[in-house]
Image (tube, rainbow, N blue to C red; front, side, top):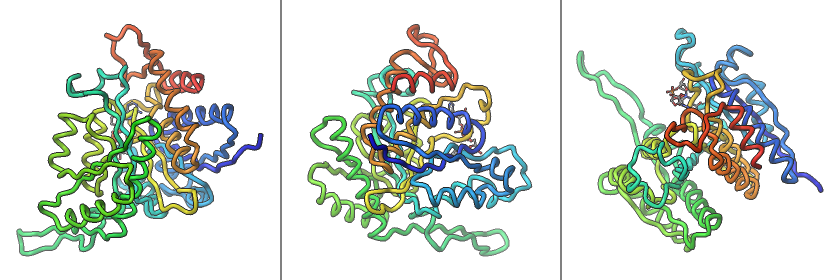
Length: 377
Ligand code: NAD
């Protein structure tokens, strides 16, 4: 059987990055055993590892590798206690991650949040609020809005008075392209879950902001092109409350940059551990391929690094998102998600999702969790 070949830049980064990346790669190798695909995985340094190897958080050779790859599988970067003399703009969070987002115009950030039934105890909400289960996707616009709009400045008005200005700017085109991502994702989710219709809840502040009014109009317009997806609009303050009261009502949440930043972290808390949550940052589609950067929602977790206790599931599910969004390998994506489900059902738990009250579960390390998921595949 002829295999399709995909080139992947694997950038593990700092802290727990290398430990969880190893498990992500292990699972991709297991995918190769099951499906007619091959992954040309090339590892390269980034973050403090890049500083140590080449004096830069994003070494030129690493960037060059990314440019000739089909996707980037990313660990995480940044160690708050490393060398405080390195200026902000040269530190990994900005010099590596923000640089990559800019370089590849990664405008769409996707964060699926799922609470597995067996892990209901990790959710801070009482069971009644968890409803029929939490399984939602936050689609956040990543390169516009308040974080990037100009003017962006602080002015001196007088000896004791300063004024800070941030500007919220969106164009119709920017809203359209992120809306398309959300509606397509909702359509795909309803197909794979067997639901009759997907749903997009578009978040705005149309009662106060000009941006909110434009956002609502443009999203409504794009929504009319997707008759199989239901569209509702919700004000951001109400959405923050509804996530805590009745999270099961949500399917896809479509948000501008800052609202998405805040709501995606709120939604993440529902899944109990950052170690469970993957993310995808997608660029503009070229033909049938979308270039993307795939990484766990959490950071480098310096408090647990190097001890074989980090949860590798976020990294493994990030690899699954890469197969789905950049390579169109939906079956392989579903196979990884189902293998994660099997490992959880079989009782495998890293420390962050372990409860001593659950007698049917067993605490395992990073490697053993990766082994269990690869074996389940
Ligand atoms: P963090 O996400 O690294 O850790 C927060 C808490 O979650 C810690 O208690 C940690 O142990 C836990 N945690 C995170 N991932 C886990 C996993 N896979 N398994 C088990 N527990 C896990 O956030 P932080 O401590 O605020 O940041 C540490 C560093 O990471 C900082 O330098 C920060 O800038 C950086 N960071 C990087 C990224 C990125 O690369 N995308 C994202 C967030 C933070």
